[in-house]
Length: 373
Ligand SMILES: Cc1cc2nc3c(=O)[nH]c(=O)nc-3n(C[C@H](O)[C@H](O)[C@H](O)COP(=O)(O)OP(=O)(O)OC[C@H]3O[C@@H](n4cnc5c(N)ncnc54)[C@H](O)[C@@H]3O)c2cc1C
Image 1 (tube, rainbow, N blue to C red):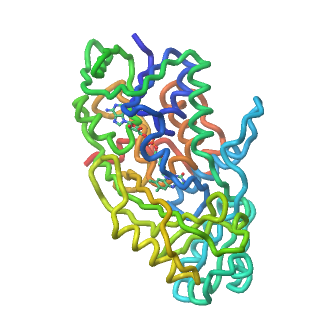
Image 2: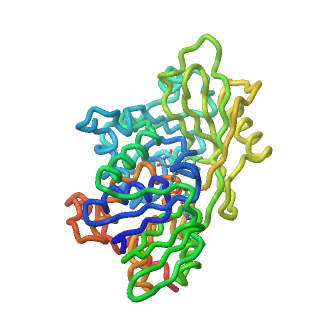
Image 3: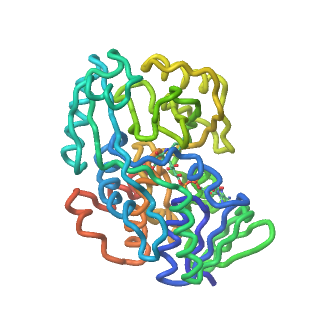
């Protein structure tokens, strides 16, 4: 009998599994041949305060310091400082005021700057696209692979078992525990953690547990050349406060961008659609002086949301031993340390860091109970 069986080997499942190994035996089952194959490996991996509500920003603020920490074993940190520049046209200044107020609550090192100063940093921005901006110097560029590998090491060194190519096909509640079947193995577990990302409701169906009605939404990212002869490696992560785009440097001389599309779709191996690629390129050309001649590559991934767009963490009200760890939307990497704190607290009774209460965060705000009715 396994103490905790985690379904899903993305950032959610792995970060919580790394906590679970401190409290008993753990098995992680991942359907694909590699961990992080779906959303966690398709993120643009930037941690900032430009998305979500107060709960998401509080979870982000609670995570930032740990994401930037250099691990004791000398391995690279999950995140390195890389500023965020939130830009607003003259029509979007109210939204920028609101975002600045949010930064006052949650961020540690930010400034309101004028359009000219923003254009000094990123010369391709046009007068139209940036009237004013909020510059957050403490935002982080995350490394999803470093994060996943760190958790994998922690699970293994804690004695946990991890299996890729192990798709869960059936789940039965039996004798106060769970029997979980893959195509080749059967496991008995005292509790299951449902960290199956876009498939979390599929897992609930298998187990006969009420769905949380998660909505996966597709997002598309394109990669293209930056302006020739310019060093763009020090450009910030640039994001419009209203509808528009985000853009960030990628490796030598290239940029990544997205129109921040959020198209509802079924759980799947998401692929970019021509129209979404074209929209991303058009939005960048509209807001900058860049001309995108060639898209080097593009990809799409799913961001999955509960109806209030907050994560879902806690035992299912209708199924003892079935633990939800889902709905990480577009912020699953940047909130993962705080969400793992909460998961560990609810599963094993470890104390929550005091800062949770300081930000007005209580487990009820993320509980699956709130989604009943
Ligand atoms: C384009 C894009 C940009 C993003 N940018 C950011 C960003 O800048 N910052 C940020 O913090 N977040 C960002 N995100 C969001 C972030 O990537 C997600 O919130 C996070 O990866 C969700 O992690 P997860 O573990 O829940 O899901 P996943 O990584 O999808 O993991 C779930 C896993 O469950 C497995 N699974 C499903 N069904 C089964 C089954 N039956 N048996 C076994 N395994 C199963 C799947 O194969 C999958 O690997 C972005 C996402 C996208 C798509």
